[in-house]
Image: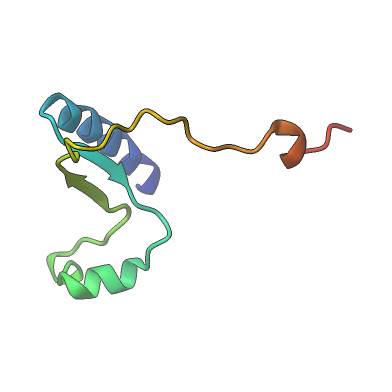
Length: 78
């Protein structure tokens, strides 16, 4: 089920962009805490992947590339 969640998140992210929203999935969270905070378990469901939605800041230009390590710094070919 968790793997299938990503399909819905991808489609939701693309739809949000068409409507002028920014969206990004959030990993590294504690699902038990999220479920408790929003009483999700009481509905018979559980959290697999939160999705942050919002408006982009019109005064910021997000044009800089993402900083990444060079391949040689991350791996060794044997």
